[in-house]
Image (cartoon, rainbow, N blue to C red; front, side, top):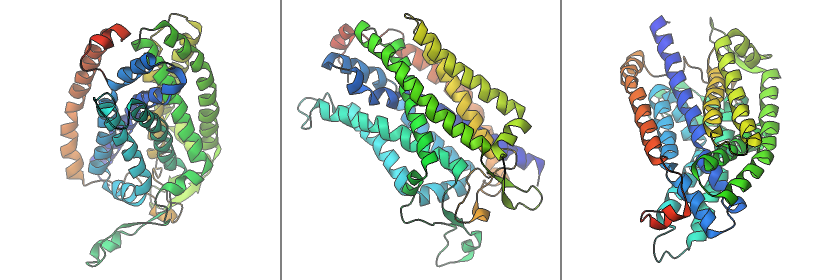
Length: 383
């Protein structure tokens, strides 16, 4: 295969992985909303929390859509297989995010029939379902999904369907695999941790800040239990390897551990990410006035998730394994767009740093001042 084509495949897997990693970080919005009734005991406190996350929810939703769009453009066979086959799982995820958007828009509208508390409950639903189901979906990159791929069907004028799903549950069966649920819960508690750290950095309310620091400890313990369980199990389990000569897919002992060892840069990114997440949490737990933990934990989250996704796709690994038919598993080589398409999109991707710079600028402008009760009373656009 052309070396340029191989480079473009790996380049686009890196970009897709980076978008996925940023999305996991931005789930702090969902994590914060899941704590709405746990931490917010008064209407004023809940209003502070909703307006804190409400100023960032568009970033999460936009990144989710961009993540899906990048997958569609660079690895269309994954898009048609997963989004077309496991559609119940993805539809529930998307519906929960739509529910979030509706909740922010209408909860403070005069005369809404459902009442503010109902819309806040919708935010909590999205705060739980979003991270758990997204985490479960990502876990299938390591545990596999039940599908068949037959490219010969492209020549069938009556049924030109390449991919088919083996289960009538269309994605929901992933939740029957306990390891998918374990990673889903790990992402959920990580989102809560990031939400707490963001509240501490963004909201000026002494009582609410004290509750956040108390909640941080318990959520950190649960996150570590689920995250370490999934990582350790993944490193010692058999992985889905690809023979570089024959393109045959086979089970290889300690495959993901070997990926980390054979690609030390990815291992380094993973370890740095974990250290940064722990530093942000520990520094906040032991520093009674420390409020910048979100930046260390946030950057650490991006690096950790990026490394895990790179580990799932690089080094001759099937990034979307099939448990129904091993040879139907998707790899970077057998599921990507044409070389011309990847090359053209690579030129377009040069604009990505400018988009990120704009997001950073907008973020700084929005968070220039901490949110207070007085500000919300004076703000005519409060949620």
